[in-house]
Image 1 (cartoon, one colour):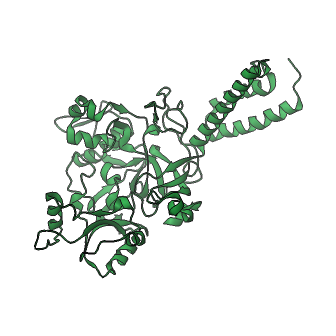
Image 2 (tube, one colour):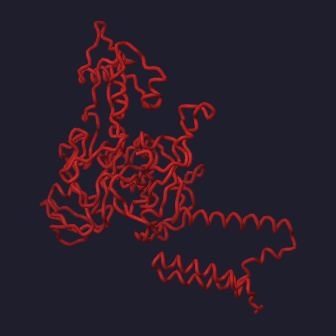
Image 3 (cartoon, helix red, strand yellow):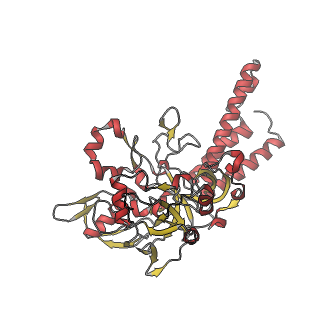
Amino acid sequence: MKKITKRQWINFTIWAILYILFTIWMGNPWLLIGLLVLIDIYLTKFIPWSAWKQSKNPTIRNILNWIDDILFALIAVYIINIFIFQNYQIPSSSLEKTLLVGDFLFVSKLSYGPRVPNTPISFPLVQNMLPILDCKSYIEWPNWGYKRVKGTGQVKRNDIVVFNFPAGDTVALRMPNPDYYQLVKTYGREGIRLNKDAFGDVVYRPVDKRDNYVKRCVGMPGDSLKIVDNKVYINGVLSKDMRNVQHVYYVETDGLRFNEETFRKLQVSKDDRHLISEPRDNQSSSLLQFLKFTPKADGRFNPIYRLPLTSEAYEMIQKIPAVQKIVIEPDVVGGDMYPIDYELGWKRDNYGPIWIPKKGATITLDEKNLAIYQRCIRNYENNTLEIGLDGKVKINGSPATTYTFKYDYYWMMGDNRHCSADSRSWGFVPEDHIVGKPVFVWLSLDKDRGLLNGGIRWKRMFRNVTSFD
């Protein structure tokens, strides 16, 4: 064996210290076995790790050198993406006007503590499907249980949070939206299974490979939450809305058509501008009459827009002389609410009260609680749950009248309250689904404008996410 140089010892010592600190952070002493690899790489060199560098063929050396650099980069990106941060793009308007479609976010994994991946063998920077190849980007074995290492903080009320979509455990690949459970209610499981042309294959996804969502944490573990006329009450106390919360309104004018400048002042994007009075059809006409808009003598309506507005934009639009009437969208058009297979009479704008599960808390397994919490018990905490015809419950094969939760849960909602599919639609977010906290916007693109005509929102770039609240 060759003599070990001082430089080799220095390199080994630096990497060994970093690796030991990483092992302590992970809380897994078995990882110390990896020190044997470091010893061989830097000191003993029994395995010829860099034998390819001795090749006399320069072409082979160059090719292998590129492969070596690419593998190192992929491994580095993989580790950074799992344990430190990841990039996330806002795909929908559910958090407008706080976060906008086209915002690119730096999402910190350290804020709440990074999770050890459930599926460690996966392609970096791809969530669940490889583009072009249209196949899974991960291998399901090995599949590890939930473990989160220590971070710099915990989820707090009103935090904006990135998380894995809880109802995304089962997905119809050709129709991922609405979620599978909504599809089952509409079409039935057999209807989905037998119509692959429309729905495609139905697949199960591990927690860390479910689609990423971003919402605001409104309810904390142990809270009782209720929504009355669009106002959120936590434990019976009115919760103050964030500044950018908005709702949908129907706005009638005396014949005036809003121009681009007006929409810009109201901060309404092109995708959110709906002149529903034209074209006129039976459905829109019935809705407008339900909202008590009066048609003219020829049966036509004045221009009526459907617009999402913040309180500031609402005050602004009231001052436009041509505006004759403003009606907030009723919750009867909000669709099915969670739990979707049990009628509680809850609507989008008048919801609950609902208790948010807390780790270690125990509930009685009555009919209502089973409807609300069975997905938590079965899908998220991985128990078998059987409900007999007599109403008696078995959990993991044993009779049960109560259940004690293993996880904390959160209630997530969008600031764009009438245009957000959130916890009101699909329920609770378990702690093991929490991905991280958006820290700042590093790029913001306005798809309604060209790049040279305001398409880059310079004022939003490199600003802390909390500055938009």
